[in-house]
Length: 323
Image (tube, rainbow, N blue to C red; front, side):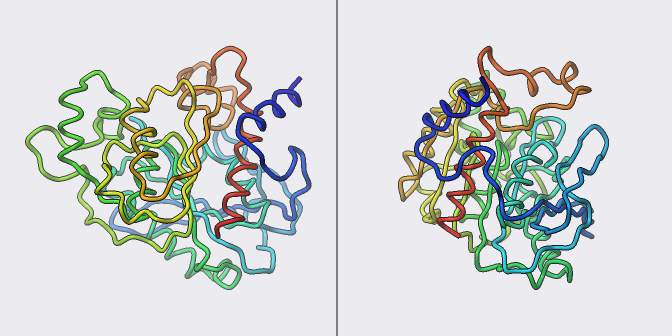
């Protein structure tokens, strides 16, 4: 039955290369680094390895990669990853299967733990994480920083767009949220309880200065949070863009994914998938199934693992084509 579901979802997503269950050229390795910033934070680095793949357990999460295995020889492209926010601050561990899949296909994934950092501080965290990885002797000689992509989920898509050259329009966000007080996902679901300033404030959330854009060659956005960006603020985002939106997302499409797709200077690839906003996060470990039902439970008939298998293949093909 699951094989039939995977096949149906692949048809929904459009033609992709590679079949579910295909042999990938590498195993996945993972390392955890600490970045000595003003507010220190950790980073997960996923990478291709030829070592045997042995899952690494951390807390409730089983990470499908060998901890601190030697990196495979070669020169691999880099994919930066910014996870979602939410009131808990979020974690890259919710996207561990996608990160491991990219590592097995020959990408190095840099995924900072943003913690309770506000939206304005998160692009700077991504840049610091990238700098540390490029300075680390375990990885520096085996990556190609000229082949740089980025992937974001939810609040992480705003981080991705900013590092791709988009400029947040805080005045628009304040105006939108004043007119749509019921849109909690767009206006009140960030780590500090809001995604932008309160009415009357003029600066975005956070204290860090905005970093300059990165030379990203391609970006992937999973259910984008894009209400901060109108057409004028997106003119620099000219690289290939792949957008996924769940059919039943709680993040209003007209203010986010749909308006973004219409406003980007180059038409992006746009795909819909079954499920709600959290369909892109990994299948929950047993301890979280009951404690976080809004994250863990899908509508009847939606197979999260099958959706992931199809989406991972599409993302890998997109980065293969554009990095």
